[in-house]
Amino acid sequence: MNFQLLFTVFSTVFLAELGDKTQLATILFASKQSASLFTVFLGASLALIATSAIGVAAGALVSNWLDPKFLSYAAGLGFIAIGVYTLWQA
Image 1 (cartoon, one colour):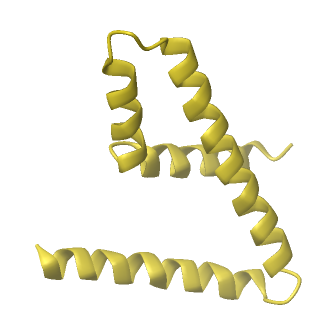
Image 2 (tube, rainbow, N blue to C red):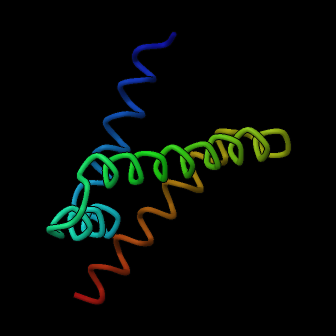
């Protein structure tokens, strides 16, 4: 197992998920008096696992036709474009 890759993926996804709408929705569900915290945790965890599995599968599939380096550049440019758009709207 490549622990450097594991740490990089974990830290990137962890930081990306902090404070986003997914976490806010999870907070909302957990704040209800009648909510089972374990059920909310399990549901949110399974959802993140499912979306991550889709991302991994899509990345593996797309890499058969496109150079992974191109995908890295495209993702980087996408994040920069979102950042510029966010700053422009602020």
